[in-house]
Image (tube, rainbow, N blue to C red; front, side, top):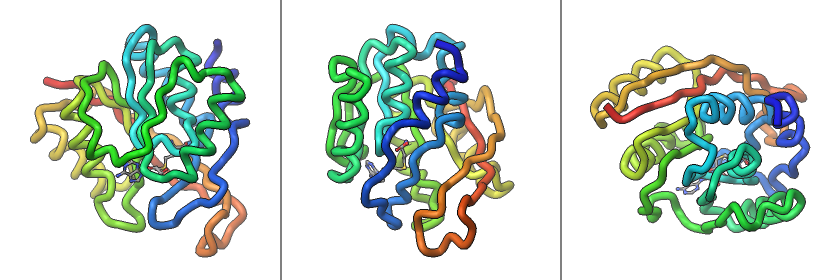
Length: 203
Ligand code: SAH
């Protein structure tokens, strides 16, 4: 499967039915998910590997990981409504055998995995909402791919924080993230925010 094909497939998946503002439920855009997963794939971090998708939402990253040959993906998501959407998406692509949906907080997940992929809440509703995601991911995996806002203060924080946790940033790739105006506070039809794709590796 080519990167572009992956992006198109993922962008066609169903989005959140009842997006919840406080949980920052934005479906990861197909092109952003494909970029993150392709990077992971190029490092051998997907094919044949055990992967976890934290805050799996509609299942985009988990599904993409399976399409690229992951052996097994744990898709961990706290919101029941989102889990239902993910279930539909997984069924559409017949990936039930590859993905295990886990309806719980990521804080309770404690299996070791080869790779974590995630699009955590960016922290625009609850400042630093992405921190527990990073802490947990660093705890259970030696390689982590994640998305964070491309703001100088966030970048500075992530650099220091990951170093303190014994991880180094091997890649940081800026990309535009388009969010359809699903929440009342979005004035435009499409909101565009700048994010960074990170690859972290245990030192
Ligand atoms: N990659 C997903 C979008 C992630 S948005 C997709 O494309 O659909 C962030 C997700 O994290 C939301 O679905 C939200 O419900 C979930 N979330 C927030 N806090 C969580 C927690 N503590 N444990 C598990 N999931 C959580």
